Every structure is written in structure tokens, then in C-alpha cells.
Image (tube, rainbow, N blue to C red):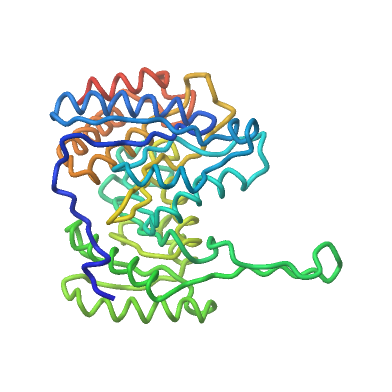
Length: 365
């Protein structure tokens, strides 16, 4: 596989007009997206870039009314955009899995967003549940393979509904898929330029087929990056070290399932879902950015949800577009707010409303 077909981490070419697709989604998604767009608008004025948006209603309520999720024509239209800004998906009136599969996973797979990028960064020690951990102790990134593994949806039932029922779920891993994820992680580790340490997180002692492929590929690609230090940790050990010694990590690369699990733990040690943002990346195509906390339907319409994760996702989106100064300014504004005025990162306990938090980030730009 040629590396030029895989990696494009730097988008330094600024565009005269960015096209941003907006998917507010379900629950509190529209509320946090609104605050993210408020900050985006302020950043555009300050840093001199232009953008246009179009809203796409891929929500649970639309599905209940029309039976429609994301169709092939929708995917074709989204490919005309530079990036996608997502609020959240998940509606309590819809059976679990339908919206998540028909919107989120559909977009990830159809747009080949094969990297899930999750920064785990503590801004204020007061919001960390770990004893004596400071911001310098929790500052790492998880690179999660985003298009294969157990989330590929491959499997079957045998004798369903009987006493002899067997359910099989297949972890599907290809050399191409594994290598492009690992190579992205090496490039990201080098570009991040912190400790230049990349950890492979897996389960080689039990999952001997999939993780043999991952380990062999990791070792082979590592030879091309002599400046990057590498190590390996089982996924269960990784969760333990997240709690005990998170300062050991710089960049972690892992598969779809393990990445999904450890990034939620990462969100907790950085202060909670209210501050955790992520990107679904296609380095050569359309990427999608979102808060990872979900739709939080019980808080819908109450103006109490924390929008900082969505605002941080907007910053990640701008960095992806090449607007690095604007992205850094937004992050600095969030850090200033989290380090001082805000009482808590939990919904309803921040000391400010959702809209007031957005206003404060704009003020701090």
C-alpha cells in the first residue's frame, strides 16, 4: 500500500468559502450545535474566513414521521461539503440501534471516515475524578479504527429463539484497513510532536487472529518511523493505566470496539462527557466532528446542557480545515472558562445556562 494514498494530516490550504453540513440530530443536539455555530461565527469574523452551512434533518423524529434515515442520495450530497458538524443521534422513541446504525454508522462507512480521533485533555484538575492528577498528566490522543472490526455488522443467528440459539458477531479486519489506521497514528504521533510515543492497545493473548494482524502490521510500519517510540498494552491493562498512570500515554491506536470503550473512560478522566469532542476522519474526503456525549434527551429544551464538547468539536473541525489559529483560539477560550468561571461540567450544575456558556466562550475569544 502506498503511503501517499493513506495520509493527509495537514490541510494548510485555506479555502475562500467552506461548505459545512450541519446535522443537529436528536435531543439536546440542536442546542449544543447552536452554541457551536455561535462560536464559529465569532471566530470567522475574528480570523477572516468565510463559510456557508446547510442543515440536514437526520433525526429520530424524522424517522418516526417518514421512515427515512440516511439514503444514498444524501451521502452523494454530503460528499460535496468540506466537513460535517454533528450534534447527536439517539431518540428514546426509536428502538436502540436504528438511528445509530442508520445515521452515524451509515455516514462513517459511506464516507469512509476510517479514523475516529479522540483527544483526551484535562483542562482543570478540579473536574478530574482521579486523585492528584494535573492537566500535564492527562494529555493524550486515541486513534480508533472506525470502519471495520465488530462494528462492520457481520454475523448471524442460528436456531434463533430456541434453547440451542447461537449468535455470532464477526470482527472483520483487513490488512488495508488496519495499515491505514496504524500509519495515520504514526503520522499523527510525529506531527503531535510531544513525546512521540505510540501505544498499540489490543488483546493479542486471546484474540489471536485479529490481533496477530494488528501486531504484525504495527511492527512493520514502525520500522518506517524510527523517531517514534512504540509499546503495547492489553486493553484491560490500558483501562487500568488510564486510572492509575494516564501520564504514561501520548498517542494510542486501537480497533473499533476497544476504541469505543477506552475513549469513554478517557472522557471521564478529562472531566466528563460535557468536554469530550471527537472527529470521524477521512484524510482525503469529508470528515465529521461531534461531541461524544450523546443526545441526552432528558435535558432537551431546558437550556442546561453543557455545549463545551460541541464547541471543542467545532475547534477540531476548524483545525481540520486548516484554520489552526482560529481552532487554537477557541480551545484557549474554553480553557479560560473551564479554569475559572464555570462551577461544574455537568448539565444543570455549570452555574450558567447553555446559551450563556456559548456567550462566554465568544467573549473569551
